[in-house]
Length: 266
Figure 1 (cartoon, rainbow, N blue to C red):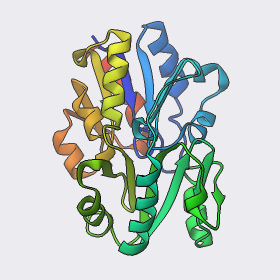
Figure 2 (cartoon, rainbow, N blue to C red):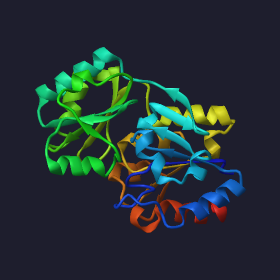
Figure 3 (cartoon, rainbow, N blue to C red):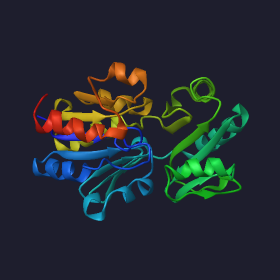
Figure 4 (tube, rainbow, N blue to C red):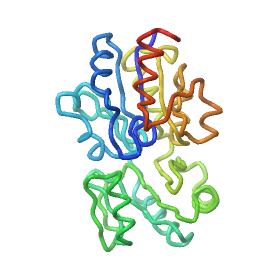
């Protein structure tokens, strides 16, 4: 019996226009009636995801943000794990030396990046409602939960291998999209946050369903007995998932919940 459902946002729960499924709140209300917990698990920071949900729902949803670096439940922060300052500054230097990398810094005080181009800022606006261009990222204040990089040269062939070589297992470096890399402190992941949530609620892996579409979702999918990805997911995520639902532009997550959970087709 499913007692906890966790879902990634971009490319999974949200469609390409960053909209929730048309039947999301109807499905959520039924989950609540059945006492099934629902968690959003996103690479985005809370300020970039909370506004997607009306106020009356925010206190009912657990938010695993910044890929697990910040967890918010019942409107209260349960857990945070920030990058240490020395490592953060080392990351800035490494990105400049590698080339082709445009950092976006997710700090408690806001989202920051260098000016770059209008196209870049427009792309950032698709994910972050509020963000600021600054002249110097070295002065961004702590705490910093996540370091995101746009890599137009290709994260799998450029940024990730280069960053892995420098930082090894000191950081959790994940390709989170076609041109995106997410970087968190070691031990931070959606999967670790989901495990902590399971323990706090007395819910087991066997009672958990998780939805995800990219590499930053891997640990979360592994920590759920019922791992599901949308048809638009990366091929490697499809191979490791137990179920594949319809794509994110056709209400894949909610349709799967209705067919698998509500109709008990486990």
